[in-house]
Every structure is written in C-alpha cells, then in structure tokens.
Length: 189
Image (cartoon, rainbow, N blue to C red; front, top):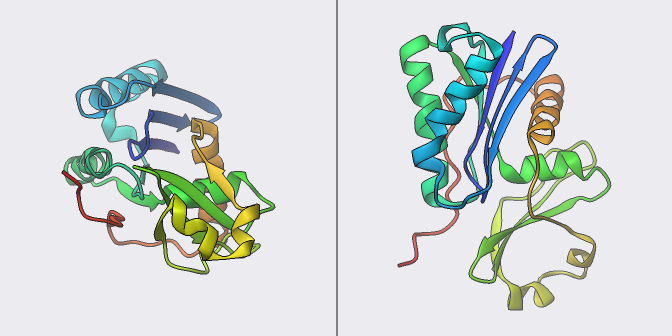
C-alpha cells in the first residue's frame, strides 16, 4: 500500500510517502511557497520511491484549520489525484494531528495569525468534543481556566501526520466521501 500525505495548511509544506516499509518525505519551510513547490515535492518523493501517481492507494490531506490559500492548494492537489487516478482521499485536521501527538491534553490550540488561536477540545480517545473555535489572545483569559493546560501546537513533522492518520484509520469509521476544507473565518484584507 502506498499512502501520500499532503500538508499545506500551516507554515511548512510537508509531502510524505509511506510505501510498504519505506518512508519518504520533503519539507519546505519557506512560507507562501506551497503552490509553486507542492507538485515538485510530490514528484520528488514518488521518484525516490520509484512509483507513479497510479500506484498510490490513498492520499491524506490536511483540511485545516490553517492558511486559507494553503488549504486550497493541498486540497486541489488531492482532488486532482483523485479525479485522474480514482485514488481514495482522506482528510485530517491540523488540530487532530496535534491532539494525536500530544497524548495527555484534551485542549488543543494552534496559532491562527494576527494574535488569534484555533481551539478544539478532544476526549481522551482523541474524538473532537467541541467545534473548532477562533479566539483572540486577549479573549483566552476569559475563555476557561482549563485553557491554561492546553497544548499550543506550532508545527509537526511527516511522522506525526502518519501517526495521526494511522490512529484515525484504526479507531474511527472510514469516511468514503471527499473531504471538505475547514475554514473558520473570512479572509482578512
């Protein structure tokens, strides 16, 4: 089984490929370069693994929350692979990934820019127990005293995405419809 992971929702552009027992990945740390480099990074991991797009079994894509444009870039690439090769697509949220890598906390937060944070509660078995909310840093003090123990995620790596996806695949029903992006707020100009 060959699984391609695409993450363009946050600052880094991460492309990873799990092919049998081998794992290939590329991380681009330059902000605002996802659109111009994503296809190059995908081609690089496929070439390194010596497989083609038609050999992919699954594409896993981060669906947000995160950069509005970044989410669209990753989702478009995943949808294109699905349209051409009929490859299954699974969506995973950035907050789910943070929840899976930080096993002891039930509140996960991610920086949303402009002094704002995305927040979501998770149960001990990593099921979201609240909708994703957007707060300004000044509102966090009034939010809830339990926020003090929250995990504020800044970044994760390709292995974290793999771990989160495998946990989700093992513990939750497989969704057969195409994933939808998570957009929390309107674009700010």
